[in-house]
Amino acid sequence: MSQNPSIKGSSREEIVREFIRCFLPSSYAIGHGEVFSERNERSKQIDVIIHDDIFSPVFKTADGGILVPCEAVYGTAEVKTRLDSSGWNLALKNIASVKRLSRSPSELTDILPNRRLGLGAGLTVTGPKRPHNPYLGIVVGLEGLSADKIVSDLNDRMTSGKDEMMLLPDLVACVKNGHLIARYNKNEESRFHIGAATLGDSYDGFRAFPVAGYVLSSLHLGLNVLLSGIRLRSRDLTTSWLDELLWIERKSEIEALFAWGEREGAIPAQGGWDAMESEAQARGDDEILRKLQDLRQKPPV
Image 1 (tube, helix red, strand yellow):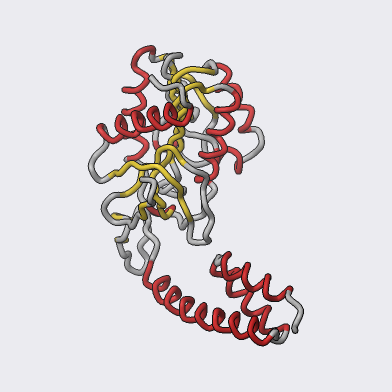
Image 2 (image 1 turned 90 degrees about the vertical axis):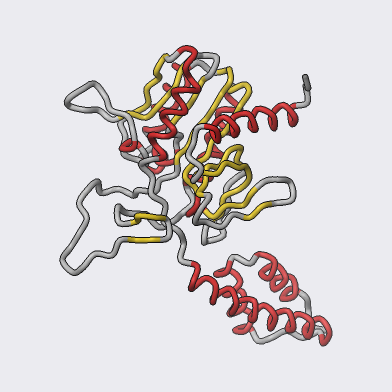
């Protein structure tokens, strides 16, 4: 009904979010917004965020979006009405902005996001030597580029190396074109293998499956398969809580120094500035860092 791109975009994204939500267990939550890391890295604005709804904190914004710690994220999806070259490149950048966020890898001993199985001396876990909490990345295009062009582009991007491979999407759904594109691994017993083993940066290429009118149901099945292979590992907030309290206390001291410096037209010794700037940079506190740098540039009265 509406020709407004913003309204059309929000509507299509909400339709896909509702579709995914209907076919996932209630332990998964769906939202839109940004993902952040412990290092204060931020993703771009993401259309669909699939995150833990039981063990992990999520922060809601005034516009209905969410800010999600990267440790709570299973995966993300980008939704495009028309997946042309511009939309395709934007979707890849948004997916990559989440996949490059650093977080501690999980293992088979992570039985819950906040619970690990303790092993005694001399015991170890056998199994695939890979992280068990990669970010799942999905692109959903209602119409646009052909499956052949998308597969060709993805396989070309793979040649840039392991780092680029890790940032590429895991699934691409071309709804009107009737194709689901997935990563695959070569297998001695059959032509190829897809599934949880293709998550991460260890796979051999991309393949398009012509599924005609079953794109969304195939996406739903693949989504459940891949999500079942991911084990989240929550961030330990115990130390972070104390660090935050101490930083708030330290910020109060710095704010008092701001007031004194502006009032007296004086600046601390060089070493004092360096120490405070190092603290602000380590905390990722851009506001304090900016104030420090502005005040430092003012000549004394």
